[in-house]
Image (cartoon, rainbow, N blue to C red; front, side, top):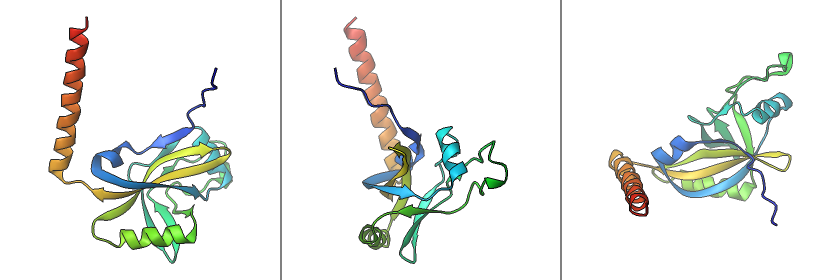
Length: 155
């Protein structure tokens, strides 16, 4: 029997999938201090309003809230501080060139553990218009209705 791997996802940014088309996704390491990792293990993080920027050849995540660790006392850092993402220089430069194009953004999609390291799934996204959001909701509703009808028919 195959061993089922546990789900190591800490947090997902579901709002990003609602507000953006995800063109491509990347994996990046994140630079954290010890109490932040302990807080992440408790699942106390919010990616809802987070975004990424490239400054001086380095990738930074802004707007990500990691709640202070309760037993951390003086070692706790500012929950909204800017954190550096770890990627290869050529990947960062490729992303920087793409983001400079009109309408592209770098949005954190998920935060998860890979072994003992914390990784951030980063999405290269293009913003949705209001009619795109309505179209997605209509498609989801139609799919739900079809599944409901099939389930009723099979009873």
